[in-house]
Image (cartoon, rainbow, N blue to C red; front, top):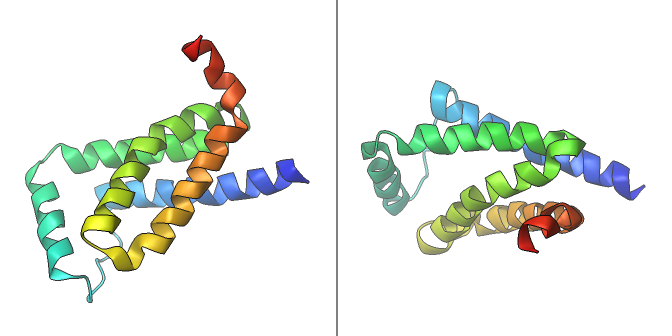
Length: 125
C-alpha cells in the first residue's frame, strides 16, 4: 500500500514540476492578476537574467520526469531540491500567501529523499 501511495504522490509531484518547467518555455499559463507587486518585481529581476528561467525550467522538467520513474526517483528528488529551496525562500520573503503550497511540496520532496536514502549512502561514505 505504501508503494502505491508513494507512486501516486510521486506522479502528481513530477507532473506538477513538468508543467511548471514547460510553462517557463511555452508561457501557456498567465500570471495571476492579483500577484503582489513585490513578487512582480522579483519575477522581473529573474527575467533580466536571461539564462536563469530556462535553467530552472530544464531542472523542473528533468527532475519531474525522473521523480515519476521509480528507478530514477532518488536522482529526480535531488535535482528538484534546489528549486524547492528557492521556492520556499521566495515564499517566505516575498509571497507568504503561497507558503502552505510550497511547504507541502517541500515535505513531499523530503519524503522522497528519505524513502531513497539508501541510494545516497555510497556518496556519503
